[in-house]
Length: 303
Image (cartoon, rainbow, N blue to C red; front, side, top):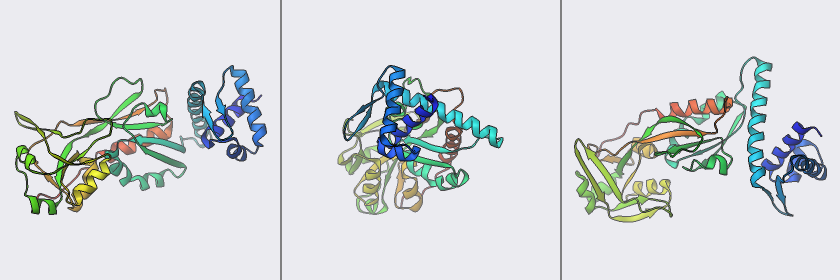
């Protein structure tokens, strides 16, 4: 058995999620491909895939083996292309997870990044969980907030800060809060996951002053985009990471409030598997994100 070729077959099966689809990509019949994977399992001494008539599911051992083989083949391909062309190519598919607040900033210049790397494709999902690197087979996760030790590489990418915003229409109707206590007389739109406590305790600092306001929640949404849309439509005042509301701020659909009061900045990290030489596609994307997150945000002043 050509083990390297069979490992490639195994990766194709996992990525295609079926023997039939994978067989077409490697020019084999599904039965021949199934026999090749069975031979690999026999040699390894453990089961890689649990098979049924409708589904293929990786075993725990199969998932660990898949991740290891994927990394090894990516590095091997990179070395081969570097030797052939005299330089490292950014190519292949990159799986990225990111906090929702980072999405607009990352997407803003992504077209140009892909133009520069014509052999690269991206798959993006929204998550702030470091475990998604292993649980979902992601190459990179861009996380906001303090991190526990994950065993992954954590590259600092900057920081974000909460900002309180509302629409001009809302402020014309309900007035503009000038002090944090004024928020108690306003409608708050709050973002929070179903498994979290409501994020209605907003912390503010100005010099040596510090206060925490339990804002009256009139609308709870389960995604940051929903909070932005609700604020733009004049439903209430919300507090989100500045990057997540950059576009409506610049366009004047939202305006910043209580600008003299600040909240603690939250770090942004890129998490990825620890290895001696990260793939070129990972390095290139991290450089792009570092640049994208460093772009300044300008905003209109409250009316």
